[in-house]
Structures are given as structure tokens and as C-alpha cells.
Image 1 (spheres, rainbow, N blue to C red):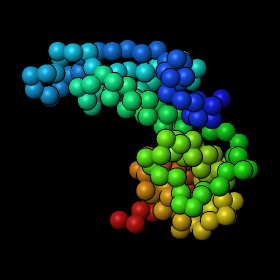
Image 2 (cartoon, one colour; image 1 turned 90 degrees about the vertical axis):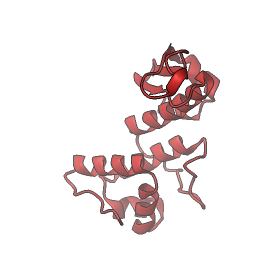
Image 3 (tube, rainbow, N blue to C red; image 1 turned 135 degrees about the vertical axis):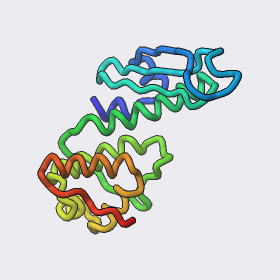
Amino acid sequence: MRDEWLASDDSRLLRECRLEFRKASGNGGQKVNKTSSAVRLHHEPSGVSVTSSESRSQHENRLHALKALRMKIALSFRLPPDPQFRIGEPATSLHNPGYPLWAAKLLDRFQFQEGDLKSAAASLEISPSRLARLLRRDPVLWTEANRIRAAFSLPPLKSME
């Protein structure tokens, strides 16, 4: 189901969600608390919820929330690795709409290899340093990869900073 949720278009994903609108709180000047522009999406089938209040536009916040929902679903559910999954050349951009599905499949492979960078890279037919760079470019992916490693009693991946 996870892959279907991540691959579905915005309208279909929204139909599976309970939407809540509220007034944003915090800094923002005169316009804050005048309109119900903050959006909370609760994806009923998965139980995942996200909130967005970055913009004064309800429409923009809905789009931000959908993007965040997809990524949270990608991080929350592990499946057996897809044998057809390939990294691609170039690797899927963080701004590509298909990125959450790509990230989920990458993490599936990483979890299946018990967080071992070398064996995960070998199964993806890339070098360990390339896999580390792909994980490092997205702080959320990096954090999740280190959470997977910790679950298998492995030390965290070393940052290049």
C-alpha cells in the first residue's frame, strides 16, 4: 500500500485524508490569526499526520502538507526491497515529485541489509561512498539511515563535516 500512496496524485491522496484548517499561531504581524490558513492532514489508512502553516495561503499550506505527508509515509513504512529498484543516473532529485517513493525504496534496501553501508551499496550496484553521499544530501534520509543502523547496534554513519 505504501508505494500506492506515494505514487498517487495529490487529489487521490487528499481523498484519503481528513483535513483540518486552523488559525496559525506565532510571529507573523497583522495577518496572523485572521484566517484559517494552517492545514493539518491526517492520512486515515496509514495513521500519519502532518501540519503546515508556513504560508498565509491555505492552498500553499495544503501543497506543503502533502509533500510532508508523502515523506513521512516514506520514512514510516518499510517493505521488502524491490528487486527492480535502481538508483538512477543522475539520482532522483530531492525536488522531484517521485522522491519520497525513491527514498522509501532506498531505505527498504538499507534496512534489508541491516544498515550495513557496504552491503547495501553492493546490492544497489553503487559504491559505498556514493550511497553515503546520497543519504547525506537529505538530512531526513541521513537521520533515518542512522536510526536504522542504531536498531542493528551499528555506530552512526560519519558526517563529512
